[in-house]
Length: 403
Image (cartoon, helix red, strand yellow):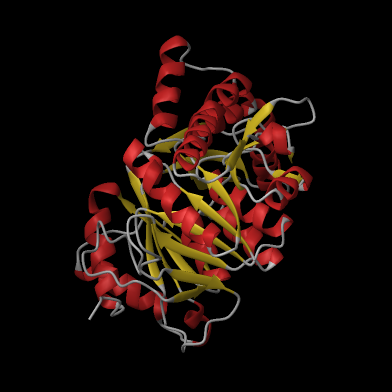
């Protein structure tokens, strides 16, 4: 049986925690399993590296930033191999280059294309625990790339798919997937299981437990995902195609404070304008989410959309450079907003879910700025100052509290 385990930065943040993770992995190894472990950089070291880079150069080249940031995960796997050696177990640390984790060339937000599994399988046959750097890959120029924040989850799922692993366990500082962030909603309830689709929406909308691309990949390749705590042995949450229990109306409430809104004012009201706008952003690797277009007036219209705060400066740069081509009057940016979402497969067969959410916000005197919906989610933009109050109000309205 092949088991892939992924541990985040807080799980390996200190020498004591590294030894704790080593012991947990060795337990599975001693049961006769083949164990592959994916690690993030220790604690906040990635943030520290970014801060250091920006002290040298406020706008560091993306290639060089990736070269720098990949050192964090390399430190983690090397130290973990040393820990396992100290505990009498053979282990080997490998980085993306040694395995050959092939990615696209988009520095800072690369996508995995394929993984060469021969080296890993060879080391497993030699009865070693294989420790792999998360979050990174190698492009066609033999340069290191990174997969975006949370990319170690994607590394783990991709390895599980490539190795046909029996399970992929994602260890975090919480012991599963909750109906809301338990740090904000004190009576949030842990879910025993959740569908890929629900988890994908929650991850995309700011739940933070799993990287959204890792869930997307798990669904595509049928990888059995389990979210567990690295700090205790409690059962986690299983993410899979179908759940056995009757679907709840809403599975979770997600909050994202990292979203910024850009409004493009005074675009020409004619066919093809929206395509030109979003095609330019797509070519710049800018992901957009909530989109609203105003009703045309005096032959012009406005388009507003959200993107992450990490992408907002690049998005503005692209739009300003193409103002003449797009023929808009001005850009407005709103940074003090939050994106609040409810997600649940039960919405498809139950009318009135959105109204219930809006009622909860109205009763709490919280204004809605923008709305976006899909089959299994409703997302609203609200003022950031109201964010935590809003999460608690909506969570309570849908009866999601732990009993």
